[in-house]
Image 1 (cartoon, rainbow, N blue to C red):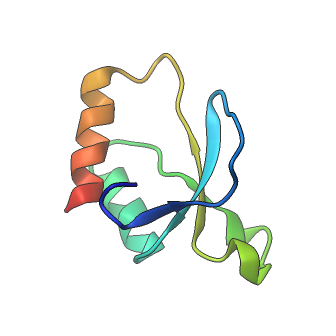
Image 2: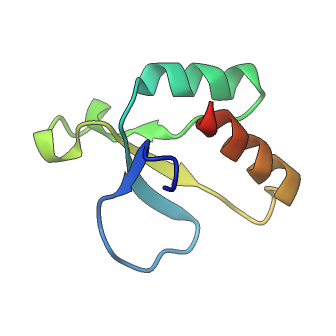
Length: 79
């Protein structure tokens, strides 16, 4: 969120999954994640074409994700 590229959509508690709006090229961020062996987030507008959900991604993070992997994803998003 601090990069300015992302913004919260809903203010709610979450466990493993969360929605976030990306202010950039969604297809490019998914491409970058796949090139780095990460499963990219779901592009919500592909299922729900509502304008309120445009540029919205559904991320899932579990205990399988290591701190190093999360740091790598964060650095990829900061580029």
